[in-house]
Image 1 (cartoon, rainbow, N blue to C red):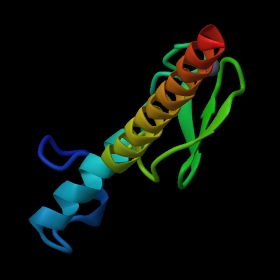
Image 2: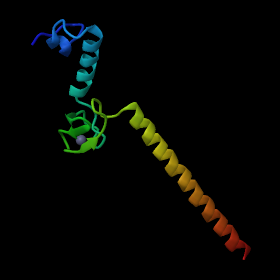
Image 3: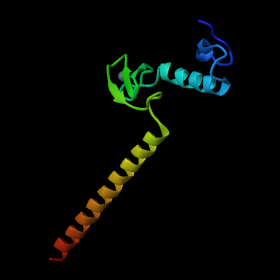
Image 4: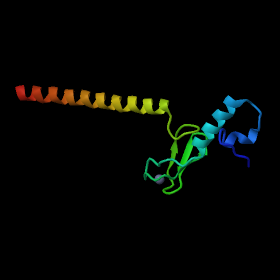
Length: 107
Ligand SMILES: [Zn+2]
């Protein structure tokens, strides 16, 4: 199939749809068709199965991710928020334990 330097995989559309849209399609397709790093075994064998589903061809792990990339900016933010929530929860438990121990020490 025809490949051009500028628009790579979107060259199949010929001159149709406009330059900007063809450029976006090429960018998305190069990411969705590429092999990514597996979060489980760290091998560069993660492939897209369907929108949002990624499978490792080495260890067989299936993970949910972005439609065209294994992780998205929004997903990363969500994971960070979740981690911070866990940390603040652990700190609350720790404070409660310290309070309990102080009370026992007073007795
Ligand atoms: Zn793997």
